[in-house]
Length: 104
Image 1 (cartoon, rainbow, N blue to C red):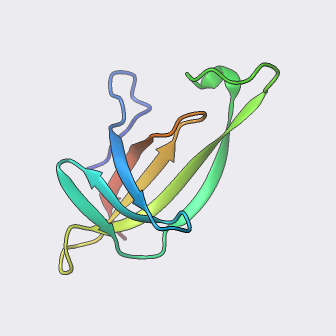
Image 2: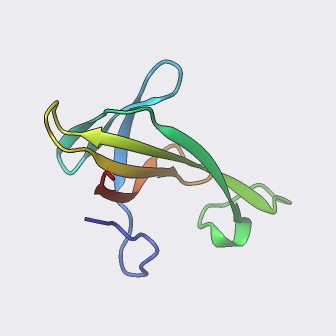
């Protein structure tokens, strides 16, 4: 299954993310399940123009940074891996599931 938040009639689901003390994702609660992070996650940042974001930004800001984590998760020890892309919209404290795919 792939979630496509850019589709105009579909919004990406909000997910709960549990982090380690150093700020690395440990688990994701999605669709009534807790998915354990099973491999080293990868963090990156993207910039969006302030007029492309739906969040108010400080006056004078031209761009905002969006935090993105790519994590490989599984439901339990023997389950297949899935890859989730988690995005934290600018100026918010919540996470959305941008995509979920079978791990490759």
